[in-house]
Structure formats: structure tokens, C-alpha cells
Length: 170
Image (cartoon, rainbow, N blue to C red; front, side):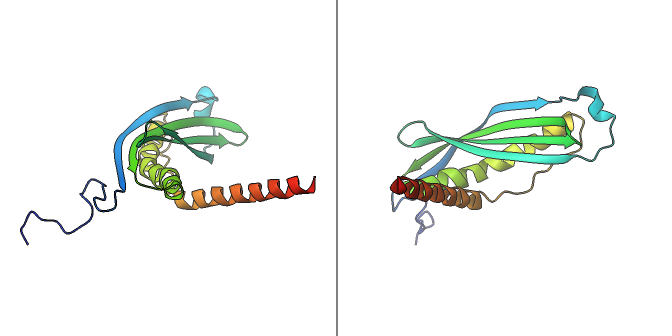
């Protein structure tokens, strides 16, 4: 075999040359960032025993026939007793090129794999903003986006089943 021949099915850039399935990250960008300090300077005069609340969501928009914008939205609310000490909202986005996938696989990819790619960028940004706000570093734990996607699918199926059973009784 010559040195320049390849035996694998992928071309090294996420493209599966044999099956026609293609996936590539085209761009990662920060879409929105907000840091709020509702307590003002009082946040620094209290005994620090924070409670951290994390809210996560994703949004997928089709840009054209083969490109999708995926936005990972994370809102972190850090409270001291019953008052919000600070709030960080991040929308980390990416443009992904996807070809050759049927709907179930496409939905899985866009709602679990793409957010998983974006999460480390959002996590680092949240940590950095927290420190720049003069608070301790805030390292978010890893998130299993596959499990979240499967949970959302199960909830959607349950809601569908409930709607159908409710409609047949009327």
C-alpha cells in the first residue's frame, strides 16, 4: 500500500466519504452574555455560603439545507440565603454542517452532541465571568446531554399519549 492511501471511511474532517453522511463544526461563537449583581456591594459583606441553581436549554435553527445553528443557553443563579448574589446568562452558539442523516439521528446529533461540543466553552466563560465579578471560581460539573435528550423525548411521548387518551374520552 502506498503511504498516501487511506483505508478508513472518514476524511479526517468529520466527513464519511463512503456513506454520504457528513458532520462538521464550522464556527463557535458567543451569542449573548450577561452578568448581573442585584445585591450590589452587599454581596461582598455577607458570610459566603451560596446556593447555585443552573438552568440549561438548547435551541436549534436551520440556517440552510445543510447548516444548523445550535445555541446552548445556560443561566446560573447564585443565591445567598433568599437573595440573588449574582446571575450569569450565557448563550454559546455554533454552526454545524450536517448532511445525510434521517430525522431521528439528526435530532439526536443536534440536541445532544452539538450542545456537548459547546458546553466546555460556556463552562469556561461562566467560570471566568464569576472570577471577574470578584467571586470564587465556579466550575460547572459535566452534563450528560444524551440523557437530557432522552428524558425530553420520554416526556414528549408521555405528553402525546396523555393528549391522545384525553381526546378519545371526549
